[in-house]
Every structure is written in structure tokens, then in C-alpha cells.
Image (cartoon, rainbow, N blue to C red):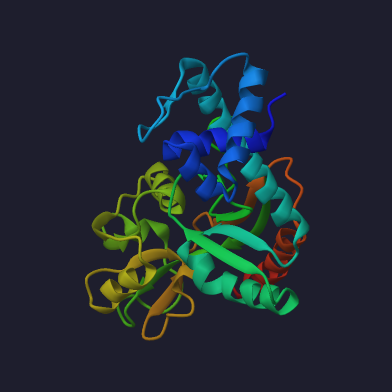
Length: 296
């Protein structure tokens, strides 16, 4: 049987090029390193290092190279397992959350504050990305604008948090007060987000209705879009929560009939048992989203 500590010693000797430097790196004596390599060689049935002697570095044998490749992978998986166990058991441990800017600005501040109040020692790490396909690698939870399938063979569970209606954002006086009809967007210059995620859904819906706006500027930044509207470049079609709470000096017009709302979901890998911290985050997010849904 190959023990992880023996494989770790094998990796250290291969990386350092000598038993002495490997011993220093691992905090062992050189004789202890030699003994562990001897045990490994006995289990493998042959030498894993050629030892030229003197100051020359030891060289990995072909048998040792096979053990080294698999040993590195086993050690990586063992570290990942230890990390997963630690994160699950520690309610005051770490939680990694994928997010996008609307959630970061509007929903997450309350979620994070309440998590810190309940778990003062917790570490919360946010990873913000605008993407069509959610990648939950290394994440406990991910906020996403729509239900989604994961890449490859990754199955995803989801919880719908809220519907975020779309509005026309313009300068006061550019449109009469009250709702606007989607057909008014046809040939209308507008500024917009890149044509991915929710924006792609909006443009697809408009195209199906024969409505084709003229996109004169695109940016992923909500505040940059609002700045362009304020500057008079063109109005924007945006989810309401992407405007809130920066709507000062702008006119927001509902659509009548309404455009399909942006759907905000919370995702996680299917079959995963949540840590106490992740479970609490889901509970808080559900409650905060319910409050925001009433606002929108």
C-alpha cells in the first residue's frame, strides 16, 4: 500500500533534487526521508531514484516517474477532500460565492452583513463574472441570471430568487410620462449591455416581435450605461435592479406590454450537501430577494 506521506516525500525529493533539501522542506531528518523512500521502493518493487552520489542531484527513474505522476494527483485530491471537509464542518469557515454586478450591489450587501453577524469568524470570497455558462468550479453558491446547465457533466440545482422587470431608462422629458410600448424601440438608438445572458434574451424576444433597436454603445457596467443615458447619447433597456439605487436624475418607463423579466437564480452543484455557512447564505438570500421582489 502507498501512503500519502510517502508520496509527499517522493514529490519533495523530485522537486528539490536531493534527500537533504527534501528533508529541510518537510521538516524531517535526512535519514527519515531515506527510510520513507525505501518503504516506497519496497512497495513499488524497484528503485524510484538513481543516486549518483556527491553534489549531483538524484534522478527519478521511469518507475519513479509513474509513481510521481499519480502521487501528485492523489495528493491534490487529498488536499481537495480535506478542504471540502473543513469547509463543510466549519460554520465559521469559508464560503465562495459567484456573483454578477446587480447582485453584488443590491442583494449581497445584506446577505454578507447578516452572515458576518451570525458567523463573525467566517471568510466570504466573491467572484464576479458576466458569462453565458455558469462555472461552479470551486464555488459553494453562484448567483446567475437564469436557470442553467453546467458545463460538461456538471449537474446544477437552482433556486429562483426573483423576477426583475425591464424598464426603459431615459432622461426626463425624452418620453412622455407613463409606460412605453416595446414597438417604440424599433430603429431607436439605445445603449445596452453586451449581448449575453439576460441581454441576449431581451434582444431575441424583440427580434421575434420584429423590433430591431439600433445599438450605438455597449458596456457591461451598469453605471457606465446610466452615465451614457444621462449624457444624452441614447436611452437604455435595463433590468430595474440594475438601475436601483442609481436612478436619480433619470426617468424610468415601464413597458406595456411587459418584456420578459430577468430571472435571478441561486445555483449550486447538484448532490452537494451544504455547509452550515452555505445553508445560512441560501436562507438569507431567499428572504432578501423576497423583499426586493416587492420593490421591483
